[in-house]
Length: 107
Image 1 (cartoon, rainbow, N blue to C red):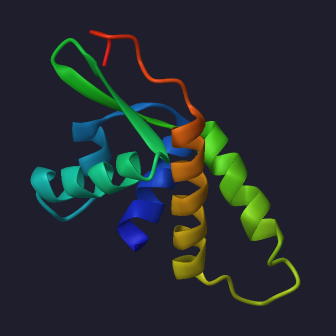
Image 2 (image 1 turned 30 degrees about the vertical axis):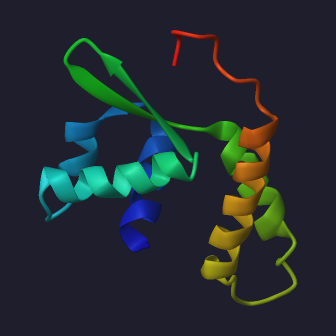
């Protein structure tokens, strides 16, 4: 999705508050929040509350996995982003299932 790719590009620079992420887009804060939710569910970003503000941060490990996958397509002119999304979902789900469960009361 072009909006989500733009958000990822913005987050390459630095962590951003949700309201700052939403600013350049001509859509509601709720619509941008839905895009952020998709990115968080795909584990491409993390979100953290700091006081009253929710901050978004790019997950560098997820981006490294994406880079490795895309590099495999270097011999081709176009990258199938739908196939990339499916690959990334499988990889991130596998990584999440390997991660230790949070301690009780710390979720």
